[in-house]
Amino acid sequence: MHLDTSFAQLIIFSASFVFATMASSTDIGVFNLSQQIVTSSLVIVSVFQVYVGRMINDAVTSEKIKSIIKISSAFSGGYIILMTFVSIFVAKYYMYVGNEFSSLYIYIFIMSFAGVFSIFNKSFIPILIKEKQTKYISLSTMFSGGICTLISFFMISNLGAMGASISFIFGYIVSFCFFSVRLFGLYRNVQ
Image 1: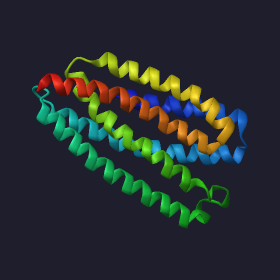
Image 2: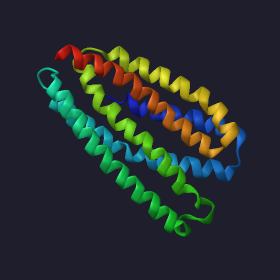
Image 3: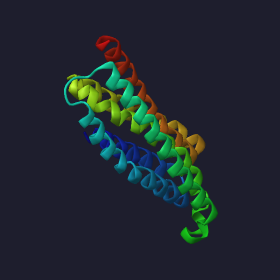
Image 4: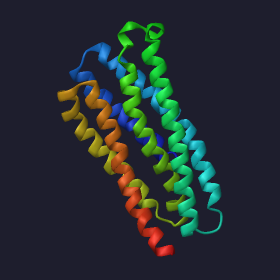
């Protein structure tokens, strides 16, 4: 249930490690603060995962999968609205945080898209667990974390904090693709 949280911490650690060797201390501070804001908001997503898990009490059916995707879409929409509001607030009132954090809103907004993919990932995990497909959760986490770490070296050295933000999202997109392919296969089999 908490593999996605571990995955987020792996991304934060790897990106921060790479970033620390290639950037200024101000950039590192801005990047780490924006990551903490985004990943802290993902705690709400864990509660959503419990809700989805309770929806699948008997068996996984195509109707339940459709319902979960619908609910995940609505939850993702609310999440992106919330994070957009946070980004706008930080952009408008950054002077309360500090002038060195004036670019914080850009990273929060960019990394919010990782939250959208995380919402879908977390909603797919209970389905995979119910169908005894847990190896896909582990494979996705390991592969996505590894790819993200490798991409971080290239992206951060070329784009700095923006590259770190993009590699953060990319890890979640890769994980989402793994889960989506497996979920589509399950959906076809339960129809």
